[in-house]
Length: 69
Image (cartoon, rainbow, N blue to C red; front, side, top):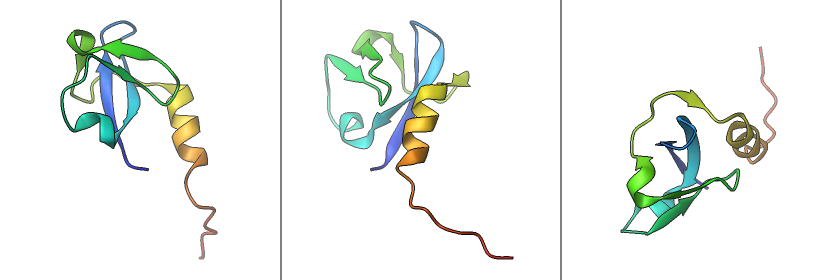
């Protein structure tokens, strides 16, 4: 599933939000790490540190592809 990385004004970290949340107006957003942010507290920009929990959860969804040299 594709994600957008937006900053929460609560912890000043960028969290991964599913792309379907980015389309349309919502009263709150829920990140992959279950961090919830109301609409007025989310900055729709990638600024600040990335949430480690979101990075791990998004990363585990990637296909297991072996790199070749």
